[in-house]
Image (cartoon, rainbow over all chains, first blue to last red; front, top):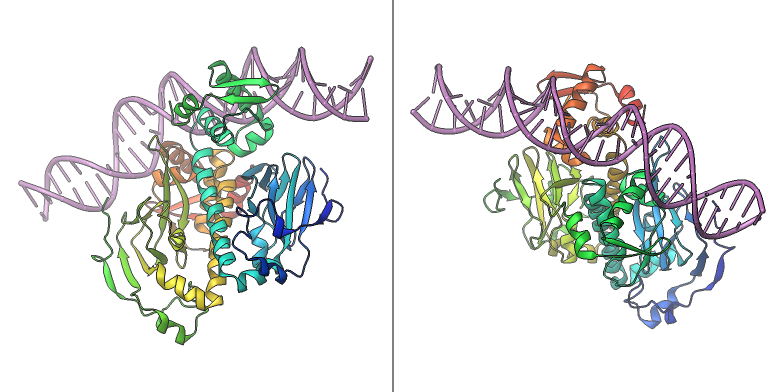
Length: 234
Length: 234
DNA sequence: CGGCCCGTTGATTACTGTCAACGTGGGTGG
DNA sequence: CCACCCACGTTGACAGTAATCAACGGGCCG
């Protein structure tokens, strides 16, 4: 369970002007000149599978943008059980609480190898003071996270195991036609509030019913309409 | 299930300068002069029990501050089942999505008689442009809602019915020594993802075990340490 | 090649949902 | 003002679902 110190995994200073993700990223609205205001390095970081970006309670000094890969945000209960409260993918921003001087409220752990930008809070604070566009973008990001949290609760914590698994599969396959690699059973369980065994059984059942086809080991395609029926309680 | 048009329940224009809640409210950081920038009326609204403040999908034109009472935010699944995703109390702000031009994402329904301020988005947008203090306060509110949503999921959607009910009771009694009126069994169920029957049984059991004392009908005091043990999975 | 982690499956138990009946308090209408 | 009715909480019996404990097999890494 390696904690990846930022320095060790450092790839080099990001060149935001030429960022391949500009347009969908936090700094989307900025002009070329605005980047001159950045006086602290923005790091481009590689995180291995299972690498921890930050830990709950750690003082928050940076905000992160995910460039590729999947990251989970995890919270824990006193009895040690864990719950995944959000899943992040490309262009998502996380660790926003750092901007308010708070410590991080989750463990952020990479589910796949991931690449991300670490932006010092000071940079964001300063730019957002001078650039209303960035400020609005921040609000939008916050609201997006909140909406995601609410629908996560409504969709993934309500109903039978079958319905919840179906809804999760729909989310994960979201639109794309291609097959996709499914997460580990334990992680799925932590998202849905189920045990790994129940998840495994449920997936097996969906596969037998033809809602789900396993191409290679743990790589699936979905029958979206069929899954949606189950998701909506059929 | 009356929808309460704002005009019908109008109490009069709020006088924010002399607001009894200033200090804890959204406009806390403003100076006296700032209020001169308000050119649209802020309404003080009374909402009866079960009154709907706004409806999911309705175009969002106002942000609300709860002065007293309890309001629930509800989301629905395609099969009609509902889930309460947040509970609001005095000084809480809701409907923030309106500031981004979004329609409301929940039904907001009063669980008790409630009194609240309805602030036109335009007022908040304008003030926040001129007043960094308000801007920061907005970010804080957003983050607070997000943190609440995350802990809601972790605490109230994880573990057995007993543990979840216990955690909810601890939240509702939160600190205060005095007895408090419990919500309806159906609402509790909608918060925890349980049926009203299971909630009723669980509460009866906690009462038999002495963790919970019913003074009057549906008015309780709690044995906090005992409840916390159960909440933490004992 | 061996061990280990992970997913799968079975058997059993515990828990929660469902359906139904009953009592009570509050509100309505006569 | 009283009677009635309805909504809500409670409880019981039962069915269905998920958790638990245990065993097994396959793939991957050392």
